[in-house]
Length: 411
Image 1 (cartoon, rainbow, N blue to C red):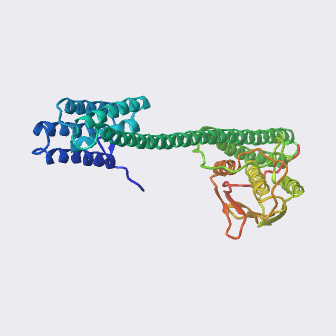
Image 2: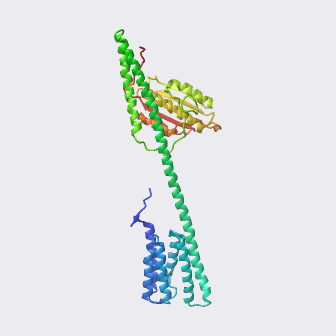
Image 3: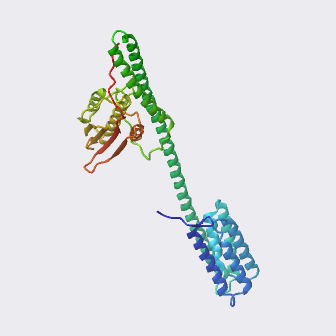
Protein backbone atom coordinates (compact mmCIF):
# COMPACT_ATOMS: atom_id res chain seq x y z
CA UNK A 1 0.00 0.00 0.00
CA UNK A 2 1.31 3.41 -1.01
CA UNK A 3 1.33 6.08 1.71
CA UNK A 4 1.10 9.66 0.44
CA UNK A 5 2.79 11.84 3.06
CA UNK A 6 1.94 15.52 3.18
CA UNK A 7 3.16 18.62 4.96
CA UNK A 8 0.88 21.63 5.34
CA UNK A 9 -1.56 19.93 3.00
CA UNK A 10 0.99 19.57 0.19
CA UNK A 11 2.79 16.40 -1.01
CA UNK A 12 6.06 15.91 0.84
CA UNK A 13 8.03 15.15 -2.33
CA UNK A 14 6.87 18.38 -4.00
CA UNK A 15 7.71 20.45 -0.94
CA UNK A 16 11.18 18.86 -0.72
CA UNK A 17 11.87 19.61 -4.39
CA UNK A 18 10.75 23.23 -4.06
CA UNK A 19 12.96 23.70 -1.00
CA UNK A 20 15.89 22.25 -2.97
CA UNK A 21 15.30 24.65 -5.88
CA UNK A 22 14.97 27.65 -3.54
CA UNK A 23 18.06 26.61 -1.61
CA UNK A 24 20.03 26.42 -4.86
CA UNK A 25 18.98 29.98 -5.75
CA UNK A 26 20.11 31.19 -2.33
CA UNK A 27 23.48 29.43 -2.68
CA UNK A 28 24.09 31.08 -6.07
CA UNK A 29 23.23 34.42 -4.54
CA UNK A 30 25.57 33.94 -1.58
CA UNK A 31 28.39 32.56 -3.74
CA UNK A 32 28.66 35.75 -5.73
CA UNK A 33 28.14 38.21 -2.90
CA UNK A 34 31.73 39.51 -3.17
CA UNK A 35 32.35 39.54 -6.91
CA UNK A 36 28.88 40.14 -8.38
CA UNK A 37 27.57 43.63 -9.18
CA UNK A 38 25.37 44.96 -6.43
CA UNK A 39 27.00 42.90 -3.68
CA UNK A 40 24.69 42.22 -0.77
CA UNK A 41 21.83 44.09 -2.38
CA UNK A 42 21.86 41.71 -5.35
CA UNK A 43 22.07 38.77 -2.95
CA UNK A 44 18.96 40.00 -1.13
CA UNK A 45 17.13 40.11 -4.48
CA UNK A 46 18.18 36.49 -5.09
CA UNK A 47 17.00 35.44 -1.61
CA UNK A 48 13.63 37.13 -2.25
CA UNK A 49 13.29 35.20 -5.52
CA UNK A 50 14.10 31.98 -3.65
CA UNK A 51 11.41 32.64 -1.03
CA UNK A 52 8.85 33.35 -3.76
CA UNK A 53 9.64 30.06 -5.51
CA UNK A 54 8.49 28.15 -2.42
CA UNK A 55 4.90 28.99 -3.47
CA UNK A 56 5.27 28.34 -7.19
CA UNK A 57 2.80 25.41 -7.21
CA UNK A 58 -0.02 26.94 -5.20
CA UNK A 59 0.28 30.54 -6.49
CA UNK A 60 2.13 30.32 -9.82
CA UNK A 61 0.86 33.61 -11.28
CA UNK A 62 1.71 35.62 -8.16
CA UNK A 63 5.15 34.00 -7.96
CA UNK A 64 5.86 34.82 -11.62
CA UNK A 65 4.81 38.43 -11.05
CA UNK A 66 7.00 38.73 -7.93
CA UNK A 67 10.06 37.18 -9.59
CA UNK A 68 9.52 39.36 -12.67
CA UNK A 69 9.33 42.49 -10.53
CA UNK A 70 12.56 41.54 -8.74
CA UNK A 71 14.22 40.95 -12.11
CA UNK A 72 13.05 44.41 -13.22
CA UNK A 73 14.69 45.88 -10.10
CA UNK A 74 17.88 44.11 -11.11
CA UNK A 75 17.68 45.58 -14.65
CA UNK A 76 16.98 49.09 -13.38
CA UNK A 77 19.96 48.82 -11.02
CA UNK A 78 22.10 47.87 -14.00
CA UNK A 79 23.54 44.74 -12.45
CA UNK A 80 23.05 42.62 -15.57
CA UNK A 81 22.37 38.85 -15.56
CA UNK A 82 23.46 37.06 -12.37
CA UNK A 83 23.74 33.30 -11.57
CA UNK A 84 20.59 33.21 -9.46
CA UNK A 85 18.53 34.54 -12.41
CA UNK A 86 17.63 30.97 -13.39
CA UNK A 87 14.85 31.54 -10.85
CA UNK A 88 13.14 33.54 -13.61
CA UNK A 89 13.06 30.44 -15.81
CA UNK A 90 11.72 28.32 -12.94
CA UNK A 91 8.94 30.85 -12.33
CA UNK A 92 8.13 30.96 -16.04
CA UNK A 93 7.92 27.15 -16.21
CA UNK A 94 5.72 27.06 -13.11
CA UNK A 95 3.17 29.61 -14.32
CA UNK A 96 2.82 27.83 -17.68
CA UNK A 97 2.36 24.45 -15.99
CA UNK A 98 0.24 25.26 -12.94
CA UNK A 99 -1.74 28.44 -13.75
CA UNK A 100 -5.49 27.98 -14.15
CA UNK A 101 -5.45 29.99 -17.38
CA UNK A 102 -2.85 29.67 -20.11
CA UNK A 103 -3.20 33.42 -20.66
CA UNK A 104 -1.13 33.97 -17.52
CA UNK A 105 1.61 31.82 -19.04
CA UNK A 106 1.51 33.81 -22.29
CA UNK A 107 1.86 37.13 -20.44
CA UNK A 108 4.70 35.71 -18.36
CA UNK A 109 6.43 34.50 -21.53
CA UNK A 110 6.20 37.95 -23.15
CA UNK A 111 7.62 39.54 -20.00
CA UNK A 112 10.44 37.00 -19.88
CA UNK A 113 11.36 37.73 -23.53
CA UNK A 114 11.49 41.46 -22.82
CA UNK A 115 13.71 40.76 -19.81
CA UNK A 116 15.97 38.56 -21.97
CA UNK A 117 16.48 41.46 -24.43
CA UNK A 118 17.24 43.91 -21.62
CA UNK A 119 19.65 41.41 -20.03
CA UNK A 120 21.41 40.93 -23.38
CA UNK A 121 21.85 44.71 -23.73
CA UNK A 122 23.40 44.98 -20.25
CA UNK A 123 25.72 42.00 -20.77
CA UNK A 124 29.23 42.89 -21.79
CA UNK A 125 31.07 40.62 -24.21
CA UNK A 126 32.30 40.09 -27.74
CA UNK A 127 29.80 40.26 -30.57
CA UNK A 128 26.61 42.26 -31.03
CA UNK A 129 24.03 42.43 -28.27
CA UNK A 130 21.32 41.00 -30.49
CA UNK A 131 23.26 37.72 -30.74
CA UNK A 132 23.07 37.39 -26.98
CA UNK A 133 19.41 38.43 -27.12
CA UNK A 134 18.66 35.59 -29.54
CA UNK A 135 20.43 33.12 -27.26
CA UNK A 136 18.54 34.29 -24.15
CA UNK A 137 15.30 34.32 -26.14
CA UNK A 138 15.81 30.73 -27.32
CA UNK A 139 16.45 29.56 -23.76
CA UNK A 140 13.32 31.38 -22.58
CA UNK A 141 11.20 29.98 -25.43
CA UNK A 142 12.47 26.44 -24.79
CA UNK A 143 11.54 26.75 -21.10
CA UNK A 144 8.07 28.01 -22.04
CA UNK A 145 7.49 25.15 -24.50
CA UNK A 146 8.63 22.55 -21.97
CA UNK A 147 6.17 24.00 -19.47
CA UNK A 148 3.40 23.90 -22.09
CA UNK A 149 4.13 20.26 -22.93
CA UNK A 150 4.07 19.24 -19.26
CA UNK A 151 0.88 21.27 -18.73
CA UNK A 152 -0.82 19.46 -21.62
CA UNK A 153 0.15 16.06 -20.24
CA UNK A 154 -0.94 17.08 -16.75
CA UNK A 155 -4.36 18.24 -17.94
CA UNK A 156 -4.73 15.06 -19.99
CA UNK A 157 -4.01 12.89 -16.96
CA UNK A 158 -6.46 14.92 -14.87
CA UNK A 159 -9.13 14.50 -17.55
CA UNK A 160 -8.56 10.73 -17.57
CA UNK A 161 -8.83 10.60 -13.78
CA UNK A 162 -12.04 12.63 -13.87
CA UNK A 163 -13.45 10.40 -16.59
CA UNK A 164 -12.56 7.31 -14.60
CA UNK A 165 -14.17 8.78 -11.49
CA UNK A 166 -17.31 9.63 -13.48
CA UNK A 167 -17.50 6.11 -14.92
CA UNK A 168 -17.03 4.66 -11.44
CA UNK A 169 -19.88 6.79 -10.08
CA UNK A 170 -22.10 5.76 -13.00
CA UNK A 171 -21.22 2.10 -12.49
CA UNK A 172 -22.06 2.34 -8.78
CA UNK A 173 -25.34 4.09 -9.59
CA UNK A 174 -26.25 1.38 -12.10
CA UNK A 175 -25.33 -1.32 -9.59
CA UNK A 176 -27.50 0.33 -6.91
CA UNK A 177 -30.39 0.58 -9.37
CA UNK A 178 -29.92 -3.06 -10.36
CA UNK A 179 -29.90 -4.13 -6.69
CA UNK A 180 -33.04 -2.12 -6.00
CA UNK A 181 -34.79 -3.62 -9.02
CA UNK A 182 -33.77 -7.16 -8.13
CA UNK A 183 -34.82 -6.74 -4.52
CA UNK A 184 -38.20 -5.43 -5.65
CA UNK A 185 -38.55 -8.44 -7.94
CA UNK A 186 -37.68 -10.83 -5.10
CA UNK A 187 -40.18 -9.04 -2.85
CA UNK A 188 -42.94 -9.44 -5.45
CA UNK A 189 -42.23 -13.14 -5.77
CA UNK A 190 -42.16 -13.66 -2.01
CA UNK A 191 -45.40 -11.72 -1.78
CA UNK A 192 -46.95 -14.22 -4.22
CA UNK A 193 -45.65 -17.08 -2.07
CA UNK A 194 -47.20 -15.57 1.07
CA UNK A 195 -50.47 -14.91 -0.75
CA UNK A 196 -50.57 -18.55 -1.88
CA UNK A 197 -49.98 -19.70 1.69
CA UNK A 198 -52.79 -17.48 2.92
CA UNK A 199 -55.10 -19.01 0.32
CA UNK A 200 -54.16 -22.52 1.51
CA UNK A 201 -54.83 -21.53 5.11
CA UNK A 202 -58.26 -20.15 4.22
CA UNK A 203 -59.21 -23.32 2.33
CA UNK A 204 -58.03 -25.55 5.18
CA UNK A 205 -59.76 -23.43 7.81
CA UNK A 206 -63.05 -23.62 5.89
CA UNK A 207 -62.59 -27.39 5.52
CA UNK A 208 -61.93 -27.78 9.24
CA UNK A 209 -65.07 -25.80 10.06
CA UNK A 210 -67.24 -28.00 7.84
CA UNK A 211 -65.67 -31.27 9.01
CA UNK A 212 -65.48 -30.42 12.70
CA UNK A 213 -68.69 -32.28 13.60
CA UNK A 214 -68.68 -34.90 10.80
CA UNK A 215 -65.04 -36.04 10.94
CA UNK A 216 -63.02 -34.59 13.84
CA UNK A 217 -59.81 -36.37 12.74
CA UNK A 218 -59.94 -34.79 9.27
CA UNK A 219 -60.65 -31.42 10.88
CA UNK A 220 -57.67 -31.93 13.20
CA UNK A 221 -55.41 -32.62 10.20
CA UNK A 222 -56.73 -29.53 8.43
CA UNK A 223 -56.00 -27.37 11.48
CA UNK A 224 -52.47 -28.81 11.58
CA UNK A 225 -51.99 -27.85 7.94
CA UNK A 226 -53.22 -24.34 8.77
CA UNK A 227 -50.68 -24.07 11.58
CA UNK A 228 -47.77 -25.41 9.49
CA UNK A 229 -48.66 -23.23 6.53
CA UNK A 230 -49.03 -20.21 8.80
CA UNK A 231 -45.59 -20.75 10.27
CA UNK A 232 -44.07 -21.01 6.81
CA UNK A 233 -45.97 -17.92 5.66
CA UNK A 234 -44.76 -16.00 8.72
CA UNK A 235 -41.17 -17.00 7.93
CA UNK A 236 -41.57 -15.91 4.31
CA UNK A 237 -43.11 -12.64 5.50
CA UNK A 238 -40.09 -12.05 7.71
CA UNK A 239 -37.82 -12.59 4.73
CA UNK A 240 -40.01 -10.31 2.63
CA UNK A 241 -39.72 -7.51 5.19
CA UNK A 242 -35.93 -8.00 5.43
CA UNK A 243 -35.63 -7.70 1.65
CA UNK A 244 -37.56 -4.41 1.68
CA UNK A 245 -35.81 -2.89 4.68
CA UNK A 246 -32.17 -3.95 4.77
CA UNK A 247 -29.81 -2.05 2.45
CA UNK A 248 -27.31 -4.16 0.53
CA UNK A 249 -23.99 -2.84 -0.87
CA UNK A 250 -23.69 -3.18 -4.65
CA UNK A 251 -21.41 -5.90 -5.97
CA UNK A 252 -18.33 -4.72 -8.01
CA UNK A 253 -19.48 -6.66 -11.08
CA UNK A 254 -22.52 -8.57 -12.22
CA UNK A 255 -22.96 -11.04 -15.00
CA UNK A 256 -25.81 -10.92 -17.44
CA UNK A 257 -29.14 -12.36 -16.52
CA UNK A 258 -31.17 -15.41 -17.23
CA UNK A 259 -34.56 -16.02 -18.78
CA UNK A 260 -37.70 -15.42 -16.81
CA UNK A 261 -40.79 -17.42 -16.27
CA UNK A 262 -42.06 -20.20 -18.46
CA UNK A 263 -41.00 -18.80 -21.82
CA UNK A 264 -37.36 -18.15 -22.73
CA UNK A 265 -36.80 -14.42 -23.12
CA UNK A 266 -40.23 -13.41 -21.83
CA UNK A 267 -41.50 -11.84 -18.63
CA UNK A 268 -42.23 -14.07 -15.64
CA UNK A 269 -45.68 -15.48 -15.60
CA UNK A 270 -47.83 -14.38 -12.72
CA UNK A 271 -47.81 -17.73 -11.02
CA UNK A 272 -45.75 -19.57 -8.48
CA UNK A 273 -42.75 -21.41 -9.86
CA UNK A 274 -41.71 -24.66 -8.18
CA UNK A 275 -39.11 -27.38 -8.63
CA UNK A 276 -41.73 -29.50 -10.39
CA UNK A 277 -41.31 -27.14 -13.36
CA UNK A 278 -37.53 -27.54 -13.41
CA UNK A 279 -37.54 -30.29 -16.11
CA UNK A 280 -39.50 -28.00 -18.43
CA UNK A 281 -36.95 -25.23 -17.83
CA UNK A 282 -34.10 -27.59 -18.65
CA UNK A 283 -35.85 -28.67 -21.84
CA UNK A 284 -36.06 -25.05 -22.98
CA UNK A 285 -32.34 -24.59 -22.44
CA UNK A 286 -31.63 -27.83 -24.28
CA UNK A 287 -33.70 -26.51 -27.17
CA UNK A 288 -31.63 -23.30 -27.03
CA UNK A 289 -28.43 -25.33 -27.56
CA UNK A 290 -27.07 -26.36 -24.15
CA UNK A 291 -26.29 -29.99 -23.39
CA UNK A 292 -27.70 -30.09 -19.86
CA UNK A 293 -27.38 -33.12 -17.58
CA UNK A 294 -29.43 -33.08 -14.39
CA UNK A 295 -28.48 -35.03 -11.25
CA UNK A 296 -30.29 -35.15 -7.90
CA UNK A 297 -28.44 -36.44 -4.85
CA UNK A 298 -30.05 -37.34 -1.57
CA UNK A 299 -33.70 -37.55 -0.61
CA UNK A 300 -35.47 -34.32 -1.48
CA UNK A 301 -37.57 -33.14 1.48
CA UNK A 302 -40.58 -30.90 0.90
CA UNK A 303 -39.24 -27.36 0.68
CA UNK A 304 -40.97 -24.08 1.55
CA UNK A 305 -42.42 -22.38 -1.49
CA UNK A 306 -40.04 -19.44 -1.23
CA UNK A 307 -37.01 -21.72 -1.07
CA UNK A 308 -38.26 -23.69 -4.09
CA UNK A 309 -38.62 -20.44 -6.01
CA UNK A 310 -35.07 -19.42 -5.04
CA UNK A 311 -33.63 -22.74 -6.25
CA UNK A 312 -35.56 -22.42 -9.51
CA UNK A 313 -34.29 -18.87 -10.10
CA UNK A 314 -30.70 -19.83 -9.28
CA UNK A 315 -30.76 -22.61 -11.84
CA UNK A 316 -32.39 -20.28 -14.35
CA UNK A 317 -29.77 -17.54 -13.95
CA UNK A 318 -26.83 -19.97 -13.96
CA UNK A 319 -27.98 -21.73 -17.14
CA UNK A 320 -28.58 -18.41 -18.90
CA UNK A 321 -25.07 -17.24 -18.05
CA UNK A 322 -23.73 -20.56 -19.34
CA UNK A 323 -25.63 -20.10 -22.60
CA UNK A 324 -24.46 -16.52 -22.97
CA UNK A 325 -20.80 -16.98 -22.08
CA UNK A 326 -19.98 -20.66 -22.70
CA UNK A 327 -22.02 -20.64 -25.92
CA UNK A 328 -24.27 -22.98 -27.84
CA UNK A 329 -23.22 -26.60 -27.56
CA UNK A 330 -21.55 -26.27 -24.16
CA UNK A 331 -21.97 -29.18 -21.77
CA UNK A 332 -23.56 -28.21 -18.45
CA UNK A 333 -23.80 -30.36 -15.34
CA UNK A 334 -26.63 -29.38 -12.96
CA UNK A 335 -26.55 -31.00 -9.54
CA UNK A 336 -29.14 -30.62 -6.78
CA UNK A 337 -27.81 -32.07 -3.56
CA UNK A 338 -30.13 -32.46 -0.59
CA UNK A 339 -28.58 -32.84 2.85
CA UNK A 340 -30.07 -32.91 6.30
CA UNK A 341 -29.70 -29.16 6.79
CA UNK A 342 -29.31 -27.61 3.34
CA UNK A 343 -29.91 -27.83 -0.37
CA UNK A 344 -26.90 -27.28 -2.65
CA UNK A 345 -27.23 -26.08 -6.24
CA UNK A 346 -24.20 -26.63 -8.45
CA UNK A 347 -24.00 -25.64 -12.14
CA UNK A 348 -20.77 -26.40 -14.03
CA UNK A 349 -20.14 -25.78 -17.73
CA UNK A 350 -17.13 -26.76 -19.82
CA UNK A 351 -16.92 -23.43 -21.69
CA UNK A 352 -16.56 -25.17 -25.05
CA UNK A 353 -19.60 -23.93 -26.88
CA UNK A 354 -19.98 -21.71 -29.92
CA UNK A 355 -20.72 -17.98 -29.69
CA UNK A 356 -24.42 -17.18 -29.49
CA UNK A 357 -25.64 -15.59 -32.73
CA UNK A 358 -29.19 -14.75 -31.76
CA UNK A 359 -29.91 -12.40 -28.84
CA UNK A 360 -29.68 -14.28 -25.58
CA UNK A 361 -32.50 -14.22 -23.05
CA UNK A 362 -32.32 -11.65 -20.29
CA UNK A 363 -34.37 -10.72 -17.31
CA UNK A 364 -32.55 -10.57 -13.97
CA UNK A 365 -29.13 -9.30 -13.05
CA UNK A 366 -26.95 -12.41 -13.14
CA UNK A 367 -24.59 -12.96 -10.24
CA UNK A 368 -25.86 -9.86 -8.47
CA UNK A 369 -29.43 -11.20 -8.43
CA UNK A 370 -28.23 -14.64 -7.37
CA UNK A 371 -26.34 -13.14 -4.42
CA UNK A 372 -29.45 -11.21 -3.40
CA UNK A 373 -31.61 -14.33 -3.48
CA UNK A 374 -29.10 -16.48 -1.63
CA UNK A 375 -28.65 -13.71 0.96
CA UNK A 376 -32.38 -13.74 1.73
CA UNK A 377 -31.98 -17.31 3.05
CA UNK A 378 -28.60 -16.65 4.73
CA UNK A 379 -26.90 -18.93 2.24
CA UNK A 380 -23.54 -18.79 0.48
CA UNK A 381 -22.71 -18.38 -3.20
CA UNK A 382 -19.41 -19.06 -4.95
CA UNK A 383 -18.80 -18.45 -8.63
CA UNK A 384 -15.64 -18.49 -10.69
CA UNK A 385 -13.63 -19.98 -13.51
CA UNK A 386 -12.44 -23.59 -13.33
CA UNK A 387 -8.85 -24.67 -13.92
CA UNK A 388 -10.07 -27.25 -16.43
CA UNK A 389 -11.99 -24.58 -18.33
CA UNK A 390 -15.51 -23.24 -18.09
CA UNK A 391 -17.34 -21.78 -15.13
CA UNK A 392 -18.83 -23.07 -11.89
CA UNK A 393 -21.61 -21.65 -9.75
CA UNK A 394 -22.43 -23.22 -6.39
CA UNK A 395 -25.05 -22.05 -3.91
CA UNK A 396 -25.77 -23.51 -0.50
CA UNK A 397 -29.16 -22.73 1.01
CA UNK A 398 -29.77 -23.75 4.64
CA UNK A 399 -33.12 -25.39 5.30
CA UNK A 400 -35.40 -23.47 7.65
CA UNK A 401 -35.86 -25.08 11.04
CA UNK A 402 -38.90 -27.29 11.23
CA UNK A 403 -39.27 -27.84 7.50
CA UNK A 404 -42.17 -30.23 7.08
CA UNK A 405 -44.65 -31.11 4.39
CA UNK A 406 -47.85 -29.13 4.22
CA UNK A 407 -50.42 -31.45 2.67
CA UNK A 408 -53.68 -30.02 1.46
CA UNK A 409 -56.68 -31.67 3.08
CA UNK A 410 -59.76 -31.52 0.91
CA UNK A 411 -62.86 -30.21 2.57
